[in-house]
Length: 220
Image (cartoon, rainbow, N blue to C red; front, side, top):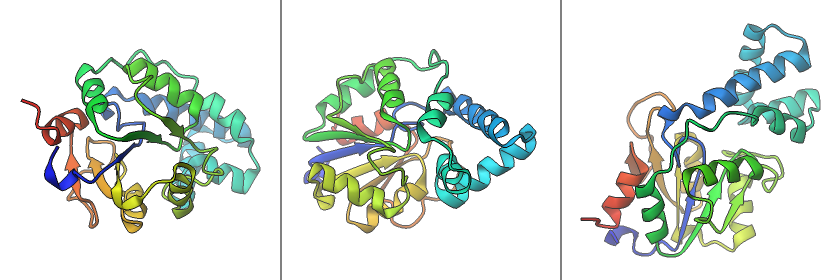
């Protein structure tokens, strides 16, 4: 293990565009269904629905949070609708599966999606048995990353020491609250958000999670 990471005993991973490459474009399907849902529920055309969806994402952290706050939408109905997608674009990543298995300590998924969707994605990737648990949007009390309460709740739920935990996410804004409570942070900068220099407070950056894990595990 890379000496700088020798004290890490809990490895926490975001799901979408982190455990699979952004090039799979799976979230584009979810994004389209979010727009469709907003259009149907609010009676908007797709252009107006898309604008509203993105405004809620920026203002509330997720489209769902905005819909719940402003229109009292049922989160279960919303999540079931937007996650009804084709996962054939995901492929088994043998290197990633092997390297996650080799990480010492506990392994968790921390996602703004829900557990049924996350488990389907993990199974498709060959990671169905790789993680102790999925801490999802319902476990967060429907207050998503990057709300600070989501990170506190994660640590309380699993008895984590933030100073001995690493969190990987493709959205750099989701890493700042993790760093603020003492976690080591990994930005999976694989194209899912605008390219640029790593924001302050990010410890590691990679374009490919499997490659980075190979490097810290000193694979030959």
